[in-house]
Image (cartoon, rainbow over all chains, first blue to last red; front, side, top):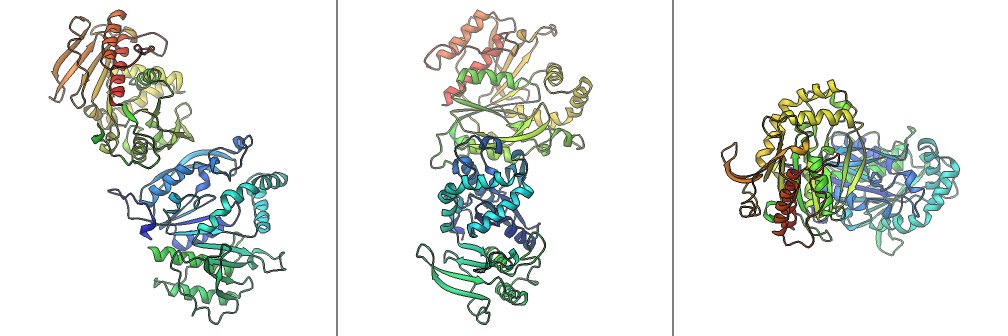
Length: 308
Length: 308
């Protein structure tokens, strides 16, 4: 997808990295997906950055503002675009750092481009200039009630907020999420939705199904033959919510580990890569494995390795 | 000097700013010169940055390193170049911030390009890529004994060091200053040396003479007729220390205020600018006026306005 990107190739710069964007609202699962990709690619071959570091205001300043962190004006989006373009052309950046625990900015961090660059955050697909930097674009789209549950748990446990604070902040954010974050769904090559099996809402995350929208904006691996005999996995021609034709890949939350591993092997085989399927795919933060997550990560991995 | 600069003009970017570099060792007078330029240009028309913010290590980390802040490896010089190029092409940057009082890095600072950009620091003339961003380049070259006195006073008063610490650090820095900072002198369009009148070393800074080397790398104002009747100011054709032909402008430390103001007016008249000579030129930090400093600043101002 070289033609998608604006590249300023500079003397001495390393060769063009492969870049993937993982966009989505707060607590939509970006870090979990990213962690598995980094482990599979190997930390020596890839770098991941979170573009929420480009917030313009710290937590204390945001309290007095008429908008939340989900508003474009609350972020240095032009600097984010600039830095993505620099990375895409193989140049290092000095990235600002926002500490989610304290809500304050701290010392900038030098980021060297690497063969694979994973960019996750609220806004990586917001502008055309930013999207042009990526080889593969992903949007995470869990059902709102699931995402709110994830956010509540995480923000209270890891970011020092109280429950009422998180609930109030989520409500403040609804309109801006609809206006600025959710429209990025329509810009992604792949939309990922982890959702409970209908009528079994109380199950743990290990049992969430994955519903992937595969847009024909990039060339996906041919899974039709691979999936012929798998009752828990299904590829289907559909119209997306906006009417555009898409494939959807459904991986059922109850898929047996053996069955999901068979699909992972089949996707891996299409890549002609040395070695076995990378292990540690599908790992949730508390150490359990999810087959639907593993298949999702392997599909993203497919696109990154294929682009390289 | 458009041809000097590498310009990536981007849609929507403001028109190309005029950029001046003021390079020199620590405590060579960069901030004093810069302050007067900012006041003369007006804070709405210009922005000044210090590229010592691109230090790679904080004060505590530097204690364990085999080099000082004067070593190129102790600085993100490639990021400095990148940011200077961005500013030169009219784009904003998110600049790291090094707090000289605490010796630590803090929150990055957004810098919008403006009509005039003043860049001061240890390394702005170090690399060809960096130099290419500037319309005018200046190197401050006070006699070492004067600079050491200035540094001792400032670092103890404003940066929380003890006298023995400053003396030890200055000695550690001698070799690196010679290897990396002082060679920038030969790259500057203008070399500025404030020095005491010979044999009167103990006089206050208000009585320092200015000795300016004016290299024919840029077009200087024609001062020959202006200077004909001024015993305290003298323009002279010389060879620089490396043998290259230069003009030198000498403004004697004892110059009468009236006499230096006459020269300032004459330089200002060459510019065809509305209004009088900007006031507050030549002001030293404790509020006294130096004629040689005022003439120096006006000459730099001449070049900035002329380039615009």
